[in-house]
Length: 356
Image (cartoon, rainbow, N blue to C red; front, side):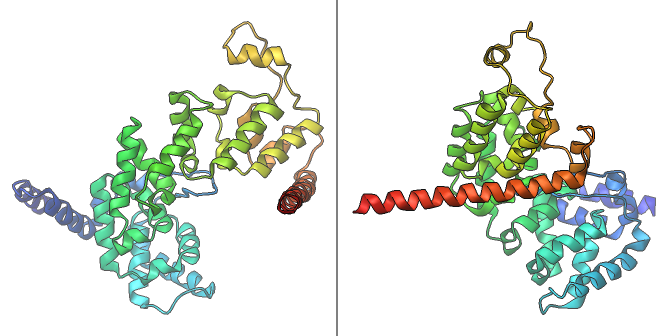
């Protein structure tokens, strides 16, 4: 068997068309999966759940169990009562393809249950699309989140958008592997071929951050390129004016992947527990100028405040429990909703008075 494979590869090496080579090698990989899957066998990637979601959970899937696991996934999907009227065998082939990418079956169930339209595409279209994405350089762990977030790639209508977005990211001097990561983590970037809104969002960051800081933030939170500028600025203003935190510490967190309500709730909880205090003005200014003689703040970092789980967060506060935090969060949500309603009523009143 080994000699046979060596002969085939050597023959392929003389084929001039790289695209043909890619398709043929893909076919070989599918046929001899026990050999080809070694590369990703030890890979396990877990990203935080975010508003735009790059949720990749890759883990080793024993090849001999694929049929069994495909049965399990299909049974669980049927139990959701969300499935469209589609070909069962085609769905099973899609599931097996995803299992061959080493996604955990629970992740496959969740994504397909939330995106049942993916099951309507023939397996042939899936294989062609996957091959095309691999030609761009996307890795197996990135492909499923990308297709779940941008179905039009399977329709074959988003390739020009993909090209334009990658060119835009290249113009920002972002390395290729990071460009692919950004797109995979935020497929909303592919909804339009107009990159001007992306440039506007990037320009908005440059009003507060240096170019290097802005690129770091985009790499950590690709949703910054598609989130409304107003939402991003509300978070920046709150961090600056209510928490006394400046650019350098912001870049060490993933605060822009969280909602404003999450940011306010975590900060208020820490503040009322006496753990977080607004820094003195001279300390903020000294930090901003990178004066090394400044005594480090006793406040938890921004990342400790917003990027931790509820359990890890409340364990930072002696005598506090998760139940107490959840009760506080519910109270804050009501308070924030009331403020939003009051602001809306005020705007409507101002509009009515202007029209009189």
